Image 1 (cartoon, rainbow, N blue to C red):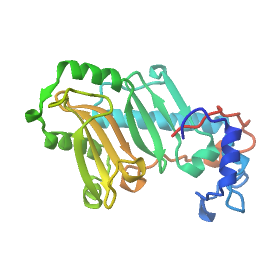
Image 2 (cartoon, helix red, strand yellow):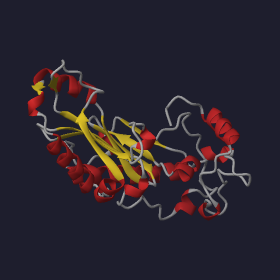
Image 3 (cartoon, rainbow, N blue to C red):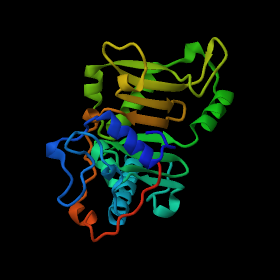
Length: 265
């Protein structure tokens, strides 16, 4: 969900749609207001949260960011601590409960998202545009040097390191490897070795987000990972984040806090 929507506007919009994303078997803990009403529409409890829940969710997301940075051997100072963050965002419990999107943390180098199935799902370099402009100045090559296999190998290794199901992606989808055209724009007959590697659902012809379960942007000369996104949780094999004391965290003895007026993936 893009930033910039007020929480009241969001609840009103979603309530009007009647979209049901939860079910009877996925109710919140006893005593916690349900973000989905009996009619299947969202309720104002979509924005319900507590400070105790917020703090524990933040701890878990930061812990997961450290795991990801370690598994990918990212250029981060480890361990990543709260002091190393330039931004953080934790969704209200009600929204997280429905969307299975807990939140994200950002260092100077990357944003780490737990946004699909309560699992880590996205990694975004924080200065991709700046990096790619530098790559274009230094690495504009003739097309004869293009190596899409190297790009695929790097992308698939990154996904596998994070316990993403590369075998299932290759089985279920069409693999597409092409020079990036979002951040780099070389002259005709040249390319920059920034590649976008993505898996497109069979039977589709476009690169729409809904048709691309997974995508990775890499710069092959430095084996640099710029972006990694897995949009379909069925391809995420890593364990979800688990709240071992959720009922306590959401109990009415914890003073509810008013969430920020934006929600994010």
